[in-house]
Image 1 (tube, one colour):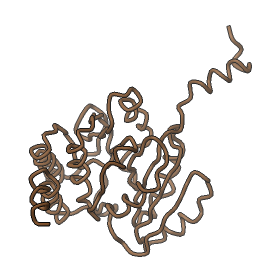
Image 2 (cartoon, rainbow, N blue to C red):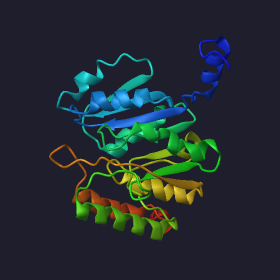
Image 3 (tube, rainbow, N blue to C red):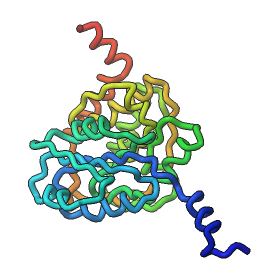
Length: 254
């Protein structure tokens, strides 16, 4: 039996350890209550190679906390005024350097311990993009808003109709990409319309898409949830705008 303290055992453990292959892009707006904990969780993942936090005009003291981080793997970028999640993601995506890129919200709704599961189809070369579905599988979910879940499902169905994908959760935060996928298109939406836009452009590029069931610790509006009904209307518009039909219409106008 190999001595667990021996050099050979240490080398074996190092070989089994996951490589830090993930660029984590974190849009952040007024998340003072959660930012320290979520950053700790992200950096605890063995897959995290770099964390790019884009502060989107926070006014609650979040920016002061961000200035405290001294881990060289963490890069903080500041947008002086609030421009929206899409604008923050564009800036973060442009700075990602590692083979895989994942979106991580700055709250505690999504669990970085699940990065390994999300990466599995990518590392096995079965997928180019993986969505973490809140509606797939048997992982724990906090029970919250009925109509919010119905709205998410309706938007997903509408997106599927225009993209010919069969996703169960188009609006999920957890989307992980090969970096070349993000390099293949230009994103335009500034707010939450970025979700259907990304999905439409992935479908248009015929990239291989997988879904993995994830846990979800949703929060209430009192706890800081920001998406609202107006964002749902914009998402509906974006589903059509960035579909093949909408894209052809815009080309004709130009």
